[in-house]
Length: 334
Image (tube, rainbow, N blue to C red; front, top):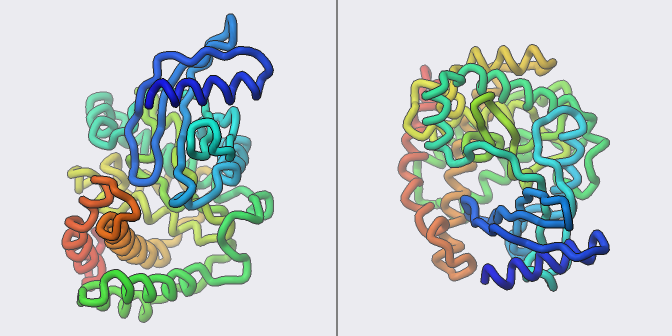
């Protein structure tokens, strides 16, 4: 398989730039439930590029790879730390899956290694502020500059739209779980007013989708869930969920830092942080992750995606129920 992959990548790059390219040092990187990332060197004849190929099976991609690459470059042009995309291929004739090629940056991506680095170097607050700043820069981009192929409508209330979808997914995947029903009632009773301004949102910025080095955040990864018009507090709430702290529960944002530090970075870069909408979206995102875990487990059980990552997802649902109960209690803030 490695040989076929190298041959396919070499053929694509050779045809793309018009001269022979040699591929070497192929190394699989950490793989998620949906995609594979492959590091490799491309020798263009006197110039060697350190690249990453992101392979996305067409059957389960959330965004076409060319649309994802486009929004990544848009964000990078506005100061958001994102690896530069050098090429995109939607033709499955090269490596059997659509893919994009990006520059390879040094740093850690595996969450527990990230936290170990952060703790050893004492940069938790720095990472928290950088996270807030990067998010504010993303939210400052005019959504009209985003591709019309991105999901999200300027006419919709993001919270109402989310709630309708959540009710449907809970009914389909978790109809017999009373905690999810209780959380839906809480979300209905506390539905917030729409934000003053809808923004581009990533929807999955968190520990695990970051490259972190000794100087802090090098890049934000995995833009497949980007929406063109959303509530920026949805993005702010997501990295604060307990499951993205990986055991460092006293540091709300990713196991890095506290809320005040994140907010300081966010507001200093022009973001407008709303505590009430943040809390609503934190509950909403926790519930959404529970339904995603249930959907991933179902995809394994019905044979759609034979992945151990998918198979293991179902066992996390009781943890989500505990998180929901802690968040919707009168003093909830976890």
